[in-house]
Length: 122
Image (cartoon, rainbow, N blue to C red; front, side, top):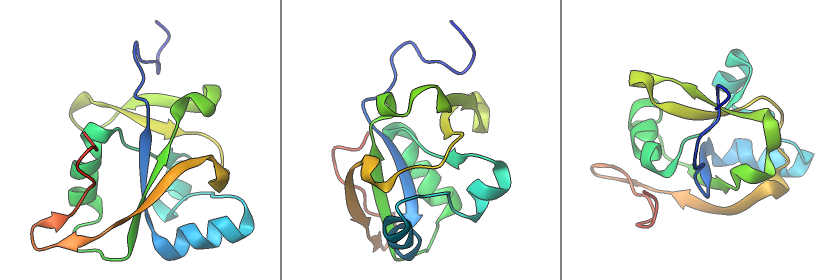
């Protein structure tokens, strides 16, 4: 199996994004990424199993976020799964994202114990 590929990719991957940044991308018809994405040279995504930890580590206490679901099969070879924390493979998109590729977008409210994810995100 080539590096950066998964035997069974997830049906959806997720981007956690400030709402203002995503709405700006929708108006421009292109999402180049958040500042960390631009600095790293790719758009960071998480699988459902990784999304909660991503929110806790990188967005703790931050309100006004969206959870954006994207079908990874529509991103082609621009999407690579690469090792990150603890060796887990994280989806990284080496291209800009057309906001129309979002399957769905949901608010990611902040609760007393952290962000409140839809129950079916695993």
